[in-house]
Image (cartoon, rainbow, N blue to C red; front, side, top):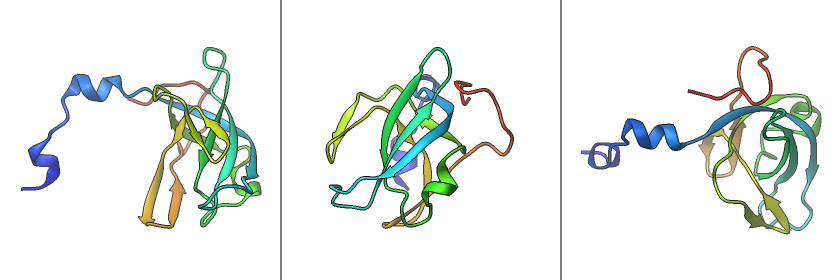
Length: 117
């Protein structure tokens, strides 16, 4: 039995996770972060506006790779202060190791703010 079998997620629980597509407007290294991280400004469309995220993507991404890219964000977590940054959204990424994160993105451009279902 895996942890997934012991604690299955209900459909209603999944629907509570508000995932939206946004476009990275800027990406700057956070010089005070203990683990290398970017401070991202992400446009999540007219209803959500521009939000900030602290994201540990430095091992697999650089600024030029991130700016202009669409990403998927969880937008309904409470804001969290991380290394001097008010992180308002969580950028979803695949984590092939403890020190690497690869951004998950749509393979076609969609309007900012579109919900992931």
